[in-house]
Image (cartoon, rainbow, N blue to C red):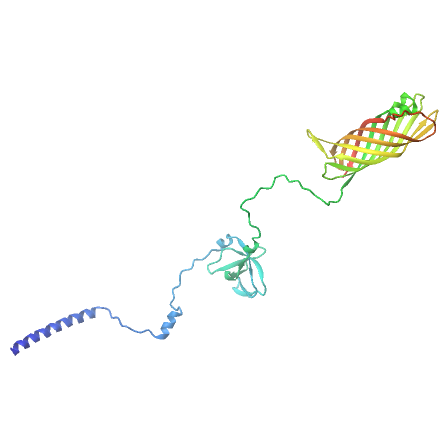
Length: 338
């Protein structure tokens, strides 16, 4: 019985040895993993990034930076800018406004633009404050009404512009007053010529105001063969319309009201006599201006009505109470100086 137990134990131990040897052979074939604790100094080096992964950097080409356009910005004093030729930093002592290219390089630097368009410095973009928000002073409205294409410009408090004008008049006179004064039908017709000096304003109102000074000489023939010479120096206000246009032809209307205390009529011939008058002349004209190198050359046609009041005479006469007017028709030429 004891022998049987011994045999069975030997067989069991042999089987255990066989299993242990098989496990040992399997462990020998597997790689060794040792649970080693990393030293403190090596842990610190890894935390400091000694073996940190560096991602690849995509270089920004210079042509792309130039073609990106420019912006305005400002930097505060105490900031350093880097000179490109030697990569040397230069300190800025005061606040500066500058222009730079919009696109940064791969390292986050902006390149500054000089007045002549060249680039000498660069600066870290974090130090640059853009000026666009400060320059946005006007916000475009969402809705608006377009301004009219034709706007009338009104100018006030301008210096008064006065234009001188020299005029010559030649006309035919129907002297109804002279006929009555001399009791002679021949005195009803006469020839007149006048020289005028005018001064008128040049403004945008519908009419132009001014003053006129005329020297008039008129000749009448009497039945007896004598001649009557009438002379008058008259003055008064003048008014002109602005230039009007009809079928591409410019024209204007003129009106004058002149008075003279110096009018006189002298008879030359057998019976010499002299009359002095106070005269009132109402003058109207139709004018066509033509531009020239001096200003305007003016062609015109005029009508004048003249009322005479005797104030001194050398002989007794009988004049009808109707006191008819002398009327004139004629042509004129003038030069307006600008």
